[in-house]
Image (cartoon, rainbow over all chains, first blue to last red; front, side):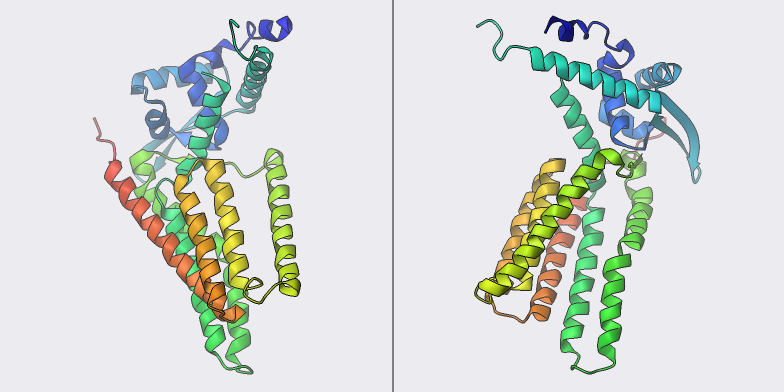
Length: 107
Length: 210
């Protein structure tokens, strides 16, 4: 039981940050999503979202591609295979820790 | 952020495809078209050279109609939805999605078996094709509503079952009953899609360039 809790200490800190966790969870569910969609779904400011995406790109968890839809620029983000594996691992650790928690704490 | 919240984020992302109602409008129009085909087939006298043409046309419509409809929905989304609330491209179901496909196939297989058995042992109205179509479509809509957290799909599921039962109780022949079911259900789904689209357009505006 203690090992399952301890595994949370080694959790991926890049994904563990709440804003980045939402971004990764959204991208996990799709092939790709653009900056506008992520902006609307996360409720972050443009600057904040850019900085979190840059952090995820540095960790090779997210691919960012700048394209055009007609004359309108579109920034497409997609989770890499590494990002997908890291998110799977994060969810697994979280699930293990939740499963070992007592039903009612403090009773 | 707990696992439940993560699951909700993933569910909401899947739900985005249905947020503008365009998919329902397209599906509803397809249903109406199927209903019109079935009605024309019913109206054509037996032995008419038009009958096999209509039958082949219906098969082509059901088998291949999904692709142009999906492309049309994507094209409209490119102009209406994505500039307002963002672009999303969905993954094709891979190995993780296969168990769902297997369960759905088992469910449809059981439903077909139920239809066959009900035709053998039950009173005629219970074995009606329209009733089976209504219940089957209702089950699919219930599953989608539960999986995506879309409450309006529960309403559509109820209406599908209701239309199927009402058409069955009227004692129409199978072809006419199916035509009535698809026509009415198509109008209901289209109306639901139009209402959803109106709500979506009212609630979302394209972002203002800075």
